[in-house]
Length: 105
Image (cartoon, rainbow, N blue to C red; front, side):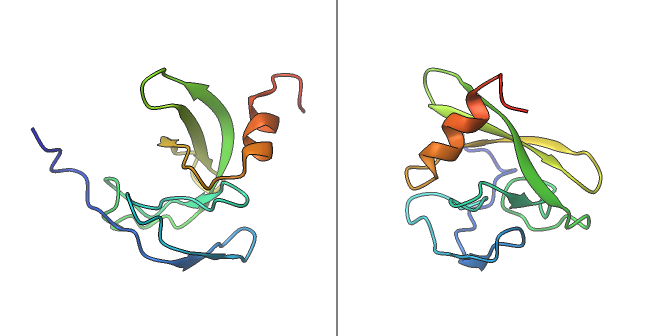
């Protein structure tokens, strides 16, 4: 059964956090910057771009579920909204490792 609350959106963008150009992922929807792992709070449902907040969502945690690989938890700096997103093959692995270390400040 297909999830009707998901809209594919793989458009290129300029990261609001680090300013780098982010190219389309090509095989799924791109929802965060692969360089700094930040996102924007722009969706009500994944990919719809119908949200009004527009705050920067920063990575605050990393977990794994075994099937989907690494999951990045993002938290909006403006309103506090939290959403999980899958780590993508071109994301910064060093930053992922840093975030996954519980001893980092």
